[in-house]
Length: 165
Image 1 (tube, helix red, strand yellow):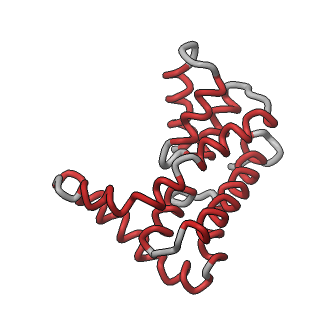
Image 2 (image 1 turned 90 degrees about the vertical axis):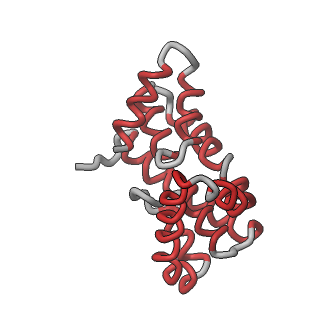
């Protein structure tokens, strides 16, 4: 799915904005994040050493805002029935992972963010930290390290050292 979405954005922005900006924008987006940004960067033939910091910064930029404001944003959006299901689904997912994260504390949050699987990543880790009451001072460095690790793993895959079947 990330491959198809990254390809969509590459085609959408191609010849309209610089390739590096495309990779940055893709990295900002939930679901895609750095993983999708690295795929887009590879498709756009951006050299790895330029792509990685661009995608990392793009993925990390929204994280502090999510940690600080997501509860207020959810409270506001709950006034609209359209968003209720989405918010409930996100909260349910957080609740399902609560015990794992709290049991392993920082390691649980780190592993949740670092393992590049669907539904994990910086956005979800920040949401989890906010909903579980893990303060920014503690959660931001853990999420930053997790995004870095996920980025290294995805770089090994997207830039050809390893391939996924």
